[in-house]
Length: 441
Image (cartoon, rainbow, N blue to C red; front, side, top):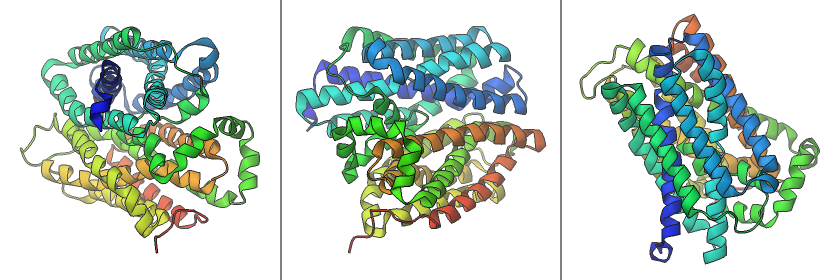
């Protein structure tokens, strides 16, 4: 099957998506330690940085999404995004000042977020135009993105520990610039017109898990509906509240939104605080892996384990029910944070806990959007917007949570709060009703 795709354009798309994944996986895992060790940010400033980053990212991507069709081509947006990413890491290198990072650095970082959605959008257009189908083509891209998250975090920590943050960010800069050059020389300006707002909504960019959401709806037949009704999607966005009322399932939608918000808040707070917990606060027993490198290995292992979970859970949802599987996702999340809070802390145990984490995020990322769309089958665009807003809102709250926890007593409070949040989410998920995908008889 892959043989028909073997051409320079296909490899260009693979290169671009690898640049997207590896640049993010090179910088995000070490940001907490960089801010605390080299910028000398305190716990409150650390949390505020991630709050401002999340809010700024939402605002910038929505503005660019709204005007992209009339102002810039997809190729131009890719170049803009990768170039802004390079400016972000150069800011970290040459201006390790909290005020500059939280203003100029966050602004560049927010603009860089536009690149990945445009790569997937243009890849989909190219595959539909050339092959008549985009499913397998974009699946290969998602696989490469996933592999970049398996490989890059451990490498990032090796570089960070052995060579320092400046060298690590310089490597990330070169990756961003490679993406910009490939986009400039290898990508067409446009293939055919489609709704830019839908394209931006369709591809989250915060992690391997988030990105895998974008195409998973193909497995349940929902994505074809979304593409066939692009104009309906635009209409949904303009009257979202009315659409919710028309659905007749308002309380279930509210419960599901709150549950996803809490679950994504826990995951974001974990990614922020875990490197600090492992390297600075916890007394990690065992010498299997150097403590300073352990966070990168943990992230890479979780990303690796998420891949089979995502592949398998689509079919499993039709056997045991989508609602049941999402509830299990919350239970595994709760178990993960219980293990972090009260279990023995050693390099082996922390790596073993990634099984729970991978099941938690793998199910949430691959089926979360599908679940929301099943509650709003007539309004897929609004469902996508609601789901992404739950992710973004959770990210904003996570920054506040980390800030308060580190000021009050340390990152372990983040994990203890995660137990409470995931437990509340499970209760909310039990209260959700009216989902279309159910157990196969």
